[in-house]
Image (cartoon, rainbow over the protein chains, first blue to last red):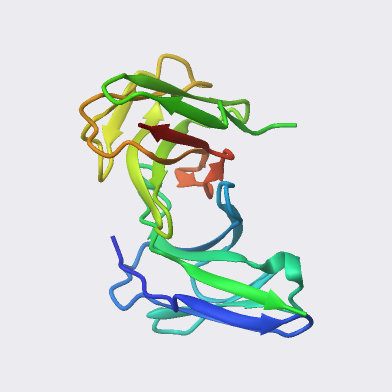
Length: 112
Length: 115
């Protein structure tokens, strides 16, 4: 399983764009990159998933360079409610289930 | 609404007692998982099941047991052999389509305190 490295914490202000970068140097050919968000005392919630280049949905964008050794989650115009822990995971999506490893994540704090 | 229900939200037990945490899903997902989270830590996989009547150990299975008799249910028993059972326990599920697994859907967890 590919190991990921993320910043432990980040601070931002409402209305700003936040970019959280995840390093995964030993990502395998069949690995996908998935980001989850977790609020205190709740289960993680899926945000976005991608394999290469750029993926965008209604809440975030995911940028993956050609070598796939890192990825960046971009949250446009954050609000106080985006204060949460963000996890980057890499792993295969086929075969024997999602045996994914969660790291310690990035604690994002958004202030007024 | 479809989702995963974990009960109870808070659970208190005395040391030496076994305790079973409930996880039910109505998403028609084939795979189910149990994770443990300690304060300030990420999630660690305890057990997972890809299909009814089959399950595999995760990274920290010692002191835990599971069963998967029904597709909808994946109860976790924390036995007295688990040395540090106090933690936040999360259940998740995922589906498979064309051999590709969907992202994990999580319940809202059970916080177990053992004294």
